[in-house]
Image (cartoon, rainbow, N blue to C red):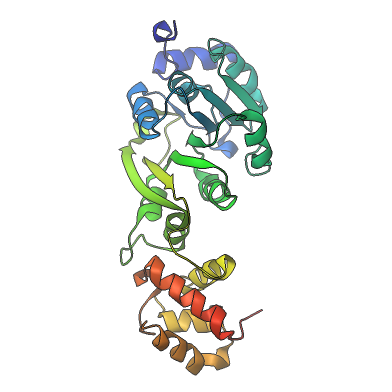
Length: 298
């Protein structure tokens, strides 16, 4: 039955749904709806779903991606912040019995509770979404930091942000976001998506990124909070050396010699820049900071 249904993600059907419900886009919510079914199929394929798996979607819009997820997975939960879209989703998703819509802001929701209520009987779930550009990083970091039982995160985001997440040490895109994402997951850019396949058309191209969640973090650290504090300090000003960034953003200014000694002791040249350090080197650095007990900026 579902194979004969008209896909939502076509220009004609999307226009028809929006007109019938009198829906207008809210720029403040970063609403851009996909109108290309082939791209949706590729997104779903990247998530490795099957009838025994559960999936959470964030920002389902009018249900274009949601219906493809319903066809591919056993259980689908969509989290939507815009109350105006709830009756539209009730209409467009009515053919599917394996989906429920949760109204709320994913950044405010207790996701552990949502998972317990929605995915009982499933050990893990995946997150698949077309994320609003303006909240991409906060949403991704919440999903990663809360240690939810996630298998894969497959999301459409701004191309530039996707490239930063997947960047390797030494490249111009490599930064604290790269380190944070790759600490928790293996990152790969699955495809580039042109702005022309959205309504309304955004100003920049998008990309689909896949984060395959690691069983344990990529590196062993003594103190995770310190690890991320060291990373953030190291990238504070990209043109500055590691020594300068650490001295001014992590340690007291009178500890220059102690910082040089610390870096030398783990074989890291103080003249290097933060973007050249690998995750392993950041772990070594953070662990040494913990061991030495150097006085930090408050």
